[in-house]
Picture (cartoon, rainbow, N blue to C red):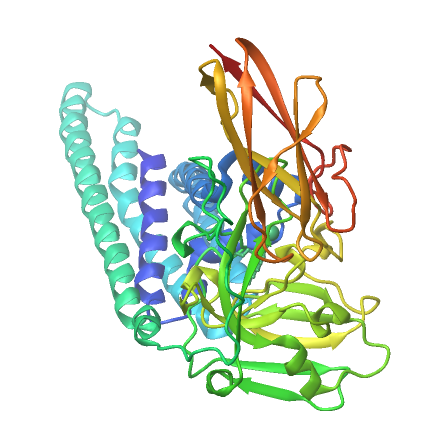
Length: 515
Ligand SMILES: Nc1nc2c(c(=O)[nH]1)N[C@H]1C(S)=C(S)[C@@H](COP(=O)(O)O)O[C@H]1N2
Ligand SMILES: [Mo]
């Protein structure tokens, strides 16, 4: 029962903080601050394990893990408080202090944002005490053995009353916590109008439209990934537990560092600029061989070379450190942002404002580089600097400082471990080598010869390219391997590499059973 009291008190801490937190920064509530801090301290192998195991459900898995951990700690604290109240209070205050430390060290969060956690912790202490009183009442009875019969009576009565009192108090407190937490969520949502503002936002037409997509970019094989990824199916990878909510009127981008001229851009500046539209395939460095952390969208934005031309980088600068409102950062080679590939500050995705989780209102899109060194979402700061002087978020965590995308081919149909009928089997998939382009995709059945597949039309070298193949399948188990050749003539390496530190490599092998 003391353990239960601990769990209920923990619920009070979180619920009260959630309710009061509705009036503070969204990233400042205990669960988000704890989770975000945990993410920041996650070693590369654990991040990879999480993505490999939970995929893009990694955040849900984190919340479940946090919930269980907090529940266990709360049980322990409950028992401690029951045995020795002062020690329990110390424990609760210590936990509160840990959460406050997590809260105030988040990017874009001020000292005042500690208030929800402080008040939540105090409320939790009050609730814990309130629940301990009936428990202590029950503990007292066996210690007073005067008249045995009368005492048994009293103990049963007193114990029963206390027990009932405890469960009533625990139930009421838990229900109140539930109401407070739900109220906090609703209030928070009502106070945030960023989602509505996004709905109402109208984007200008581009000054330079996207190059027309040729017919036949889509692999004819049914079940192959759509060539253009719908925004709501686009993979999402980031460290943001709660999606940053930025008002376009508050958004500002500062370009500074090794520049002749500091530049500040507002969202209106972007709306008024000569925007371009371009299809670009983004890829995540954590994508395993054969994985699906890649997507192809039509982006609308201002070329970064124009932004940098205004700022005039000084000699010696070789990197741009882009930083998100939530503290994430990426290091991108300066020359990549100045050449003629369509690196941009994007405000539109597939004809609409960026979805909140894909970086609204402004993100970077850089063809040819993995997202962790280029695709900063919710971007608010560009510092022109040198690789020797500055390190980005993932580089500080064991990943490489540069991340050109490796050539990769993927079998999508048939799926691994599929059972297919003998005869003609349609095989198909997607390959990419952004900025170099795909010139060949070959397939190997078992240990046979490598055979060229039929390539679908190429839209550009910065988008992925699909392929198809008609296989005369004979009964039995078979392995299908695939490899691509890029525009420089280089064949995709068979050398297996893990995603850490600069991207997975190797040939995908798919096992199918032909019946
Ligand atoms: N602010 C912010 N931007 C970020 C990240 C992040 O964690 N935070 N992750 C990067 C990584 S690793 C990738 S692969 C891309 C993914 O972009 P998407 O979620 O729109 O697909 O965003 C990049 N931009
Ligand atoms: Mo990524």
